[in-house]
Every structure is written in C-alpha cells, then in structure tokens.
Image 1 (tube, rainbow, N blue to C red):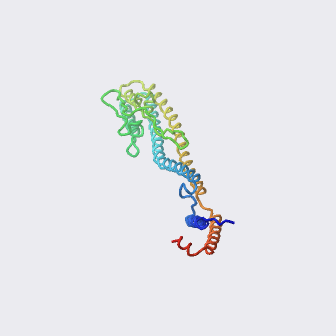
Image 2: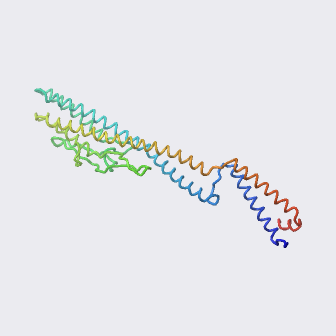
Image 3: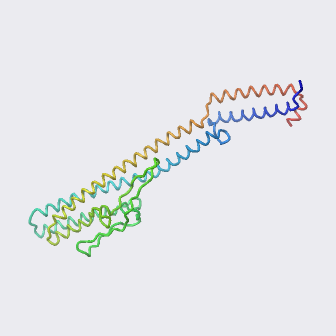
Length: 298
C-alpha cells in the first residue's frame, strides 16, 4: 500500500479543526448562547435578527403608548367635566324658562351661565404636557377664544379639523384626540357648545325666549355623550394594544432565548467527543516522526 504523502499535513488540519470545535463548545457552555454570529448558524441568526426587530418595534410602541394613554385619559376626564357643566347649564336654563323672572332672577341666571361658559372654555383649552388636547394638529396654543365685544359672544376656533391617530403593532390605527370644532364651536359643523351657551346668555340678557337654545344645548350634550363613548372605545383599544404589545415582547424574548440558547447536556457530550478525538489525534501524532512533527509545529 502506498503511503499518503499528505498524512502529516492532513492530521494537523484535523487537529486544528478539533481544537477550534473544542473552543467553540467551551464558549457555548460558558455563555449559555449557541448563536453569536452569522457564521455560527446563519439561519438561526437571521431569525434572531427578525425577532429583535419585532421586539424593538413593540418596545417603541409600549414606550409611546404610556404617554398616549395618559393623554387620552385626560381627554376622557375633560369630556366628563364638560358634560357636568352642560347638565348644570340645562338645569339653570330650564328653571329660567318655567316662570316669570325678576331682574334679580335674570341676573343670577346670566351670572351662572357666564360662569359655566367660562369653565367650559377652560376645559376646551385643556392641555397635556404642553400640548392642547382639542386643537387638532395645531397643539401649540389655546384652540378657543371668545369675543365678548359682540352680542352674543363669538367663538373662534384656532385649531384645525385633523383627527390625530397612532399606528399599532398589529397594523391598525387608533384615534388619540378629538378636533375641538366637533364639540365646542368653529367651522366643523359640530355641537358648538360654547356658541349655544353664548346664545343662552344673550337670551336671558335680552328677555328673549331661551327654550330653543336650551333644547339645542340638550342636543349638544347628547352629541358630546356619543363622541365620548366612541372615544372611550378608542382608549380601550389603545390600552388593549399596549397590553398585547407587552405580552408579545415576552413571547418574542422567549422565542429568541430558545433560538440562540445553548443545550448544556448536548454541548457537553459534543465537547467530550471532541476531546476524545483530540486525544486520538495526539496518539497518532506521537507515533509519527517526532522531529519532523515538532519542526512542523514550530
């Protein structure tokens, strides 16, 4: 049988490969991670990259959702306060419509309605973290002003009609704010609550029947309730999406851990086999021409 002229060289190549395998397995046992680079397992590493991207998107949404949910809760609370003020205004106006008023009665009703209008104006101009809640996209300033130089007082809306919304990880969108002109007045064709209050104040100031405007305010209160109910649905949806995103982060993290984590028992067995193979190669090398081998090793 003819001897392999490359036997020594091939043996050393095998020995280096076994040593490299041993080193990798030792690192896996130490770190608990089997995939640290594309070269280790391109398929697993690629999957890990996708999982990391999804987790990053979920984390970003969760972080922003905390602020968004807080803002939406303030919107909801503000609408509740507006409803309370309108209910009081309807009660005051209804009492005024049910009998003959003295001058003192009229003055009291006007004062009460004026106070309510002032509070509703303040609620309409509510801001959260420096951003007006009912201004559409023009959140930098107060969305509503009242001009008392006219009779009745004129409502001006300084915002716009844009409906703000946030994208969700599931690919949908959730409304996060309500343009103020849908509720308080302006050119949005909404309830015009501030305008109706101005009309009521004018009615009692000029001894004009306030029945129609009282009914209009009741209708506006109903519209407010419908808009609030719809917005509450959006708030619940945002909270659900936030919870879903947080749960998905946990699941994705578990999937990533499973994908890249090391199997200690399997790795230990592979390491033991590599050590056996290395010892076998050393035995072969020992039987070879030592001088040539040592020269090669140098």
